[in-house]
Each structure stands twice: as C-alpha cells, then as structure tokens.
Amino acid sequence: MRLGAMNIKNYSNPDMWVSALQREGYRTSVFPADLSIDDETARQYGRVAEQQNIIIAEVGGWCNVLADSDRGTRKESMERSKRALYLADEVGARCAVNIAGSRGAKWDGPDARNLTTETYEMIVSSVREIIDEVKPRRTFYTLEPMPWMFPFDIETQRRLIRDIDRKALAIHFDPVNMIRLPELYYENGTFITSFIHEFGSLIKSVHAKDLLLRTDFTLHLEETLPGMGGLNYPVLLREIEQLDKDMPLIIEHLKSDNEYSLGAKFIRKIASEVNVNV
Image 1 (cartoon, rainbow, N blue to C red):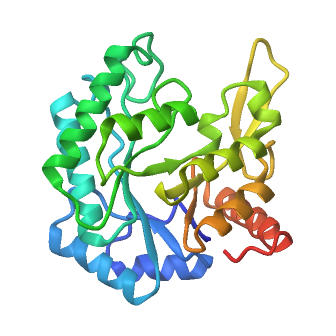
Image 2: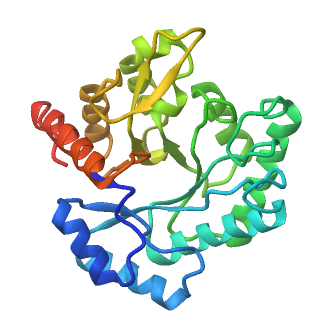
C-alpha cells in the first residue's frame, strides 16, 4: 500500500512536487496540476514520477456531467471528464476519477432525481461516451461513490460495472462515502472486507478519512480526521495490502497541513501495528 494526501498538489514543476512528497514520506499522489496543463508538461510529471518511484493515483475531473450546476454546463463537464481521462492515460495514472453527477444545482449534492432509473441510464450513457471517445490504453475511468448518488453500495457498483460494460471502467473505493446507515457504521469492517473481496483488482485507488456517528437527531454522520471516528482502519489497511501492495491510499478533505500530518501519523501507526508497509 502507498500513502498519499490531497494537500500535495498545485506545484509549479515536477521537481518541487516530488520534493514535497519525499519530505512527507509519501509514495503516491494525486496528479498535482490543473487539467488545463499542456500535454508535454503533463508528460514531464509522469516521467519524473516513474523515475522517482511515485505512483500517480488519480487525475480528478470533479464536475457534474448530468446537469448545469455551480461547476458549469453539462457539455463543459463532459469535456472536463474526457480531459481528465486523457491526462490520466498520458501520465500513467492508475485512474481518472469523478462522481457520477447530480441532477440538482449543487454539483455534488443530493437531489430527488439522483437515484431514479432515468438518472441511472444517464450515468451509463455519459460514462460510455467518455471512455469511447478517449479510448485509454493504460488507465481507467472510475466513479467515486457518494451517499446520495450512484454508486452507493456493493449492488449499485456491481450493476454499473455490468451495464456500462467497458473494459476501461474500474472502481474508486471511498468507504466513508458508502457508510449511509448506523448498521454499516458499526459493522464497517465487514463491509470493507466484502467490498474489496467482491471487486478485487478492479479497485484502482482508495480515499482515506474517517466518519463519526453523532448523537444529534435524527441521523448525523460527520467526516473527521483519521483516527477520530469509527472507520475500521486495521481491516482497511490489511485488506488493501493483501489486494495490492502498491494500492494508493489518499488522505483527503482535511482543513490544514497539520491535520494531514496528523492523519498520516495515525495511518502509519495502524499500518505498523498490522504489519503493512505504507
């Protein structure tokens, strides 16, 4: 398993980026530049990563391909998603990642239409178009799971893989985003094991954070710093290591460099306890 973090990005050249990774002891990273980067500069990042034994985990599209929203029009978002997949292929990233999309005004927000059959069919169509136009040779397109859009559990992930039916479609695993119920929260180790065993080598990258079930009414699940919630990290790290010793685990959604350092310290502590190399 290889640990990385979302705060190692936006560096002006590959050498600065690699130096930042090495200072933190990270062996994987998200692609550190904006999608507007020119192709040759992007390839330089890929070459330097390969030379320095850094795995580029993912190139993020992060837009809404299903509706006009606060992240632009559907057409713009489709082009952005295709660009992310193209760059992932050019730089040798394990995957390009986006969410499936929301029918609402907020690009990643809940909406009454998000879980309808119509929206499911829109997702299948949009992903096929992205993959078929780019035709990646060595990377994959993935959809990050979300609590209020497809995929949100093992069954909807399985259905999307089947119905999209493209060899260049793979899986991005974010266990916190899939814990939607108290029973999943308390038995998340079982869920993590089941998910990883179900999909195996289709999983290309994993996001790391934590989740806390509050006592507030009615149901309040809150993202938090790794180690401050209920996610079963010993199970997650063991299962990732058994699946793929080079699997990227990317810490995300923290508020400061200090929080990222604390999150990495916790994950490394658990990794040491369960005999996993990060």
